[in-house]
Length: 327
Image 1 (spheres, rainbow, N blue to C red):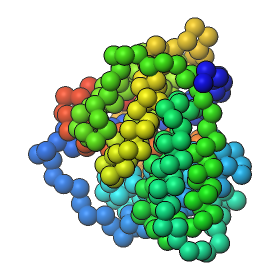
Image 2: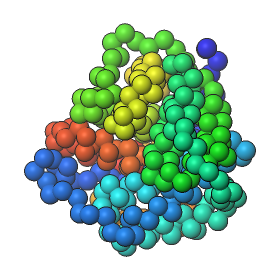
Image 3: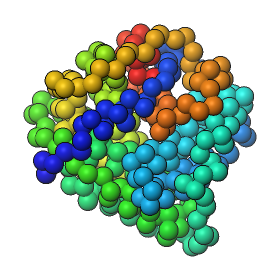
Image 4: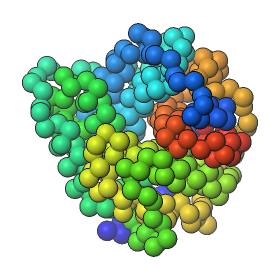
């Protein structure tokens, strides 16, 4: 299909990713680095996962695109805290931001109790695979599917009929966007090869940062989130569903390599910052009402996850020097 999601709308949505998150110090995830500390009880609290699943399932009844982002952001935030062993004060600040913005909204309200659907994860995966390699709205069908699958596995009791149906409807809501033929030279490694594919995605993100300087960094940021979702699905054992998105991801890399279109809107670059999302000071300086549609959580979660898998210090140094442009 050649019909396109309005590119101006994408640029507007991508610009909402504004934030100033920087990456960990170079080498933070090298083989010689100390392993992360065990999560604290506050990190292990799955409340944000529950709220995120509620939001993903309810998004088709509301604004599927923006509200789907919010649901995925809450799950990303939980994983960001746990995977990076953020301290209790930082975790509390992140949780407070959601309490101040989305937690009490209709979007996050609970669903009726019900029996667990034993085929919940399979249904989500099949809904994604139904896309047939079509590039749909910057790959958000894959991004949100991965978050839902991850959430249902973390909290199996939440995989009720209503939530599963809502998530599947959300995945099927996404429309074709710049669904061009992929260039033959765009050949990512198998998504099950976590090291090689993570390095591929990070290199593409690095060059995209430079290519889109002055035009916003939605393309580079979504290179991280789209690519990481496929690596994460494969790492969970869902290789077939990840690989069903290979053609769509190759299309996205092809589009991104073309750079800004002639009529692309200029967007001011971010200023460098020494603050990191692992620090409570970063989240405090953002203020209480600056979450946008949630890229501020989704981008760093995807980046940190890929950085650990890639285990490439040289690549980490390269990205650390320019990552403020995305985050």
